[in-house]
Image (cartoon, rainbow, N blue to C red):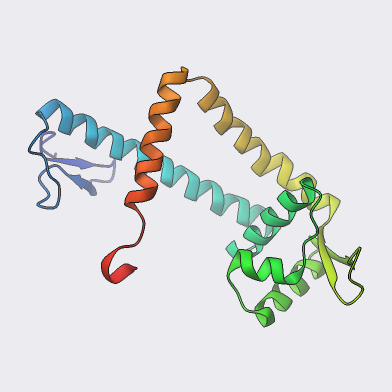
Length: 182
């Protein structure tokens, strides 16, 4: 059993957070502060794991990989906003080459997720649209999950939401690649 003042373990006994890392400045923190910070990190890890599990379940349900899911999400958002999506837009969003984009689009068209259509203003370009069945499937699965997340945020008092916004913004800044990772 771990010493609760030292480390945090999950149910399988794996240590995830060390209270005494030499990289963490604890000089202005009380033991209660450190305990609370560890609980924040535990909760964040729990949410990340739940989000990862949900993402894997969504990909399995729709029989798609991560690039496919990113492309479909982007196309759905664009269609909701009345924007036209071209293969170049998909390549930019997913971060793949034009040849890989062609393979991705071919695969998703063959799977019944996308259709190619004539671009409304450029006859030399095709636009890519999500099929109605895929849009409905995404709405009923991923859309419902986003609605549950929104409900969790809406259930919080405004001041708590502002604290969460500040925390997540600071976390985003802290996670910007630095040094050799940049």
